[in-house]
Length: 296
Image (cartoon, rainbow, N blue to C red; front, side):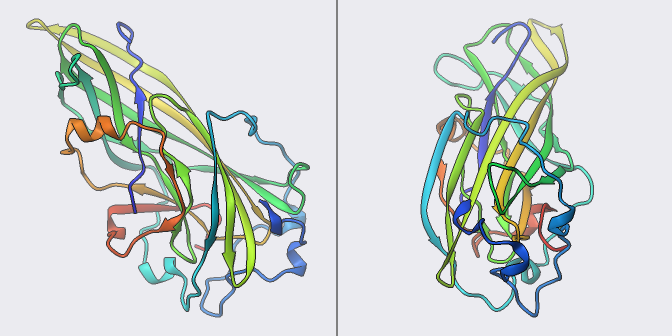
């Protein structure tokens, strides 16, 4: 699995589905029902209110589709087999802030690499635009306390971080997405998962905007000591059939801040990431998971 890096320009004060959706939930078996599956904790459909997405889902920076993704049969849910670490509060992870000269050489010294992903808040509702479906609106924040020593002037700056990912509890399939970069702040991805001959379309939309919570500078021997807290507010939307209850949010928490500047700059592109297995070579201990719709 290719880790979903994201990047955003630093804001400095001095520089700068659904083919299966028509079926009522009580008339259709969930696609991944299994005797070994933890019972669903999903809210009964009649209790779910009508609602409307906060964002306009027709207005995104990048829209992508993926070919039908065929899911192999399985005997035990992937999430139950892996004994995932499930978070109940905010999670700390890592980021890298870069101030660059005109040749893209790093000219700053980072004094902090620790950021925070807040526990997501989840709203679930039905929507007139998607009959027979549920919309899961997931809001979370990523907080970046930038603390760095840098020259008084430089060419450009940005910071690189691991965007959260979403994965299916039952199959370990990573939900397709687009790399957020300094050039895009939103995307929409649509397509079909195929399991035992039936298609289940899943829509995923992501929106972000950033703000500065505080910014302080101090002159230190000709260099600038910058202390700045940037907060990214993110909203994810998943439009799924009413019976689907397998969505996990995962946060990469391993320390990989030793990645080269060249690698970070090259990955600052809005690449499309198709659905793919989480990967047997991936260590799930490098991740912490939040339940969105998945069994607890």
